[in-house]
Amino acid sequence: MKIVLASVGKPHEPYVKDGIADFTQRISKYFKAEWILIPPPKNAASLGEADLKKAEAAAIQAIVQKDDYLILLDERGKQFSSPALAQFLQQRANESAKRLVFLIGGAFGVEESISKRADFIWSLSPLVFPHMLVRLILSEQVYRACTILRNEKYHHS
Image 1 (tube, rainbow, N blue to C red):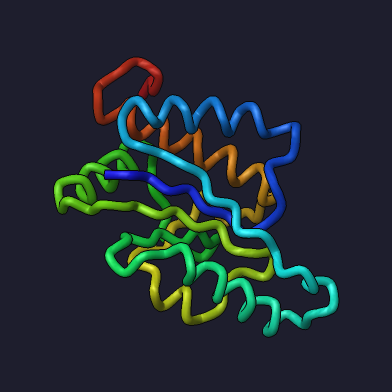
Image 2: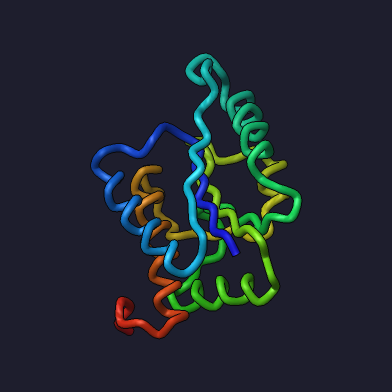
């Protein structure tokens, strides 16, 4: 199984770049892993919210494959404990999912077509975080789930 961590937005900011790279490399010991950054539309500043979400949806649809298991991050989604996230990953692996795509939408969320395409909607927290921090938290939590599956000592609870 390959894990794809995808985000709409600009490249990783320096204050999180090293952490994201470190956790992504650590995930790669368990599953193939990569980040896909979906750049905002060139004219994003001049678009209204609906048009921006539509343009972002087209870019998202271009990277999400038909057989991908798409997990949309949204504060209104289902929350997991870290061990439950590990079980969720294991279930996807047991189902022979080829690609597990974790998607962080744009500043206004995602168009309804993307929400409907999602196989699962996950909330890290009911709080709203800056996109850069969500990227870091996402990569760390996926790594933590991998260590839980292997019964390694990174997760202590």
